Amino acid sequence: MTIAGTFDVKYPEENVTLTFDFSPALAALGGGATLASITSVLVSLLGVDGNLGTDPAPAALLNGAASIGAVSGAPANTAVLQPVKGGKPGVSYVFSVVAPTSIAGATPLELKGILPIAAV
Image 1 (cartoon, rainbow, N blue to C red):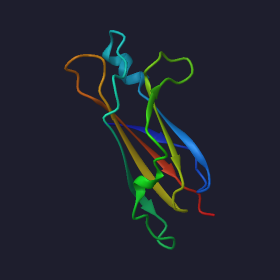
Image 2: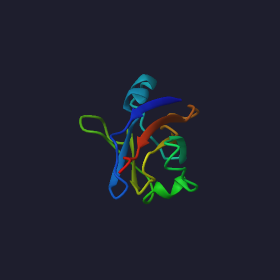
Image 3: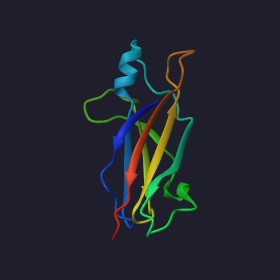
Image 4: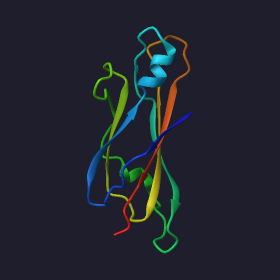
């Protein structure tokens, strides 16, 4: 598992797309490895501001299905793009993306990223 880092703060009313860049891990596998598919995108809570409560349905942030793409300057099929919406102010969410590679028998790769929602 690798932490992709923390995404920019999002306001609850914004719709954004999170990019999980697997290109460094794929390059380490060699042989022109790419992402073959997306096994799962899971959302959980990292921490909350006690005054603002929690989110009983963190998966509601997912705004449609994730897709495979690329970041600027990287080969095709090396990133997962996940559209998100909503979120509870003051809550930080952890996204976990698992994706198998084009290399037969290789262990699927996982990236995690943290998305903080602005406390308005």
